[in-house]
Length: 289
Image (cartoon, rainbow, N blue to C red; front, side, top):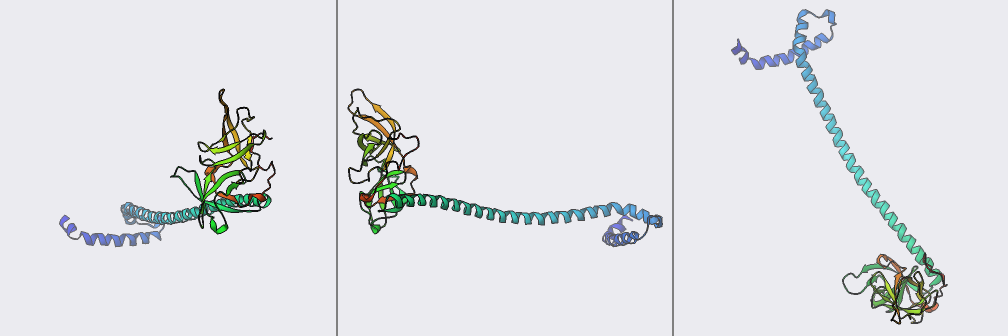
């Protein structure tokens, strides 16, 4: 018998695969009370196989549905991520434009009110290799600039032009040791010369030991050297050191302009037209004259 089954096993399996569905289909239209004993026997034998096939089919369908859903979700996540990155870039650009517009409005208002003769320029580079403290601006001979012209912002002195080319110029910063500007302590009217110190600080030189200078005093340009207009803020006194046997004082000045964050500046082309009120620059916490 077993050799016969082994010989015709393929035919038997195919017959069962055909007959079992036909039988199940026929029994679906019968009520439980109409089933014959052989129907019940066949159902009892075929139910496990049928349940297994049905479970396998449902599992395959569920897996395919889940896979298709996950593929769709992955594509949607990728699209949303790209869109989010684009929106973040737009928001950042808008914020940067807003900040730039605010600075330019402040600079323009300052120019229109106090400095009728001058040029606005943008900082395009900073010298980090040489021994000089300089920045480069995007204006030059093309707009009438020349060496030694003063460079300022609404916050105060930046420096002066040292090199001028056709379309750009170099600005020697206030904190450079080669830069000097005549200055006055606004409160006591004591006069000295501001020179670059250890960045970001400057030093006030040539004040007698008896001159009245205190921490928090405001220091402004004197206008005597015919480079900077009179009364432009330079900085505030941060440290005063008097030595017993010295005729001068050691005075440190913190510039009111953050020279490490310069973006736009103003070059005064004719300071003789500039008329600044004494209270135009009053830093927070500074001592009034």
